[in-house]
Picture 1 (cartoon, protein in one colour):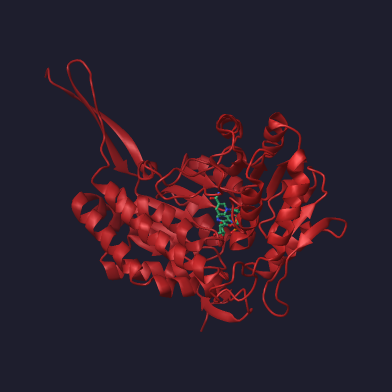
Picture 2 (picture 1 turned 180 degrees about the horizontal axis):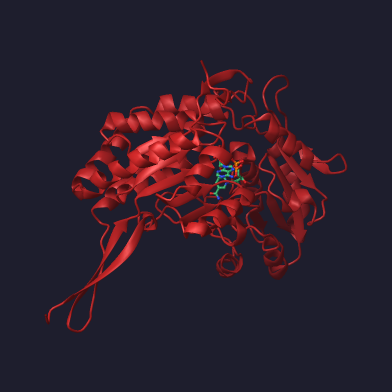
Length: 456
Ligand code: NAD
């Protein structure tokens, strides 16, 4: 008999029921934390080489299940098969990268008089990871891999709509020989299961990825215990196109920079800012490119964009594109599934909700600017500061504008923003702390300083 609170996982492309998943209650969370704390003590005491070997084995087992994990992601999240394969491969790469860090996680020796002074990077203990539905596998692994590598246990609460890949990854961890209870998955509602992790005194750190509103609530709760916290929140990222840029290249790249993952991407370049002298030419080029994006069955290799995650998300996106707005629209399937066409809103006030709030759907606005100063002003006219792109052939301008835009991840003449070996995170209300990159493991440690007298 299924618990009344079980999660119903729907295929967003068809609305068919994929699975029902029991949820973890507060008592389940308490028990999981106790088991994780016990497992973590053994893990932290193991030789670094052994921990590294097990993480490499975990990576190898994931590698052997890329297709299975990708198909699961397609079914529960509606991601295109190409993207889903990349996501599963990203989990493997994150585990490999973190494994390489285990034996390099060194403290320092600092010169002092009368003895020696050394620092140790000690694991925090039990880490609570609260993940969103938009990139269920990679975002979970951004925290999971370095946290385990640094000697911690991980309790992962996936989003309500996408628990399946997380549950499968936990099985694969066991298959690889990762000690039991070191990595557990706790599906359930944020306000119950997620909140229980945030509240729990033994959970030393929360890594939260999700909306800015929930991030703020979690931050204030963590304050009660001075609990460590990393926040990866929303974005409304600019794509700044200067008139001196390769306009053809900028226009060709702009659609997928806001349509990839159906726009459900915290780094989506949803504010396209174009220098006025190039504005008409850019629109002329970008409009047919938006209309030509292939939207449909995510299992079809040729599909570029799938459905939105849920009916609620579909209604949210519809609410932003009001009838009074002028827009270029692509196509979307009719019938079941949470479909919304690629949409580029033109002729809109820079202060309109669709231009300033995170839509988290396949919708962008295009706005003109006058000069470099105006571009930076518009780019920074937001509470968010996660990503951004700028297109120019002037290297001095590229550097000046990259430094002037208040965002954590910028790219010039491209839209890349997330690589597991470079740091990622937000300015302003887009987040707190950094994930990935050379210091990924350090974020899951506490620095201890020890002075040893040589004069006793
Ligand atoms: P959400 O904030 O509603 O939920 C995120 C997670 O938090 C889910 O697992 C949810 O169950 C849980 N949660 C909800 N309320 C909670 C509470 N009170 N206590 C503890 N946990 C709680 O966000 P979402 O709708 O799942 O994801 C979309 C949002 O995530 C977007 O705003 C997007 O920009 C953001 N996002 C940010 C990044 C980033 O790296 N900055 C990455 C992906 C998504």
